[in-house]
Image 1 (cartoon, helix red, strand yellow):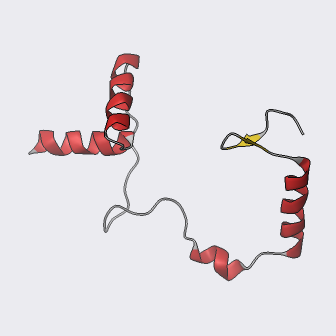
Image 2 (cartoon, rainbow, N blue to C red):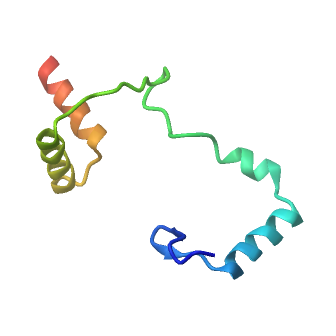
Length: 87
């Protein structure tokens, strides 16, 4: 295994891969896996739509700084700004 292989910054070892393989070979509880759901949770009664938004490097930096300062995601900051501008 290469030294660069990580999950969330933690190196993945050959032993971990062997443990995952053994777990997969033993089988999974399909009912338990289905209970987890798929994708991100919904935000309303109808499905949300993903849109592309082009920002300059400065705009993105400003957005990221505000999101970090307010402990929010980029999307949350953008949605709040849209809500304020529509009011």
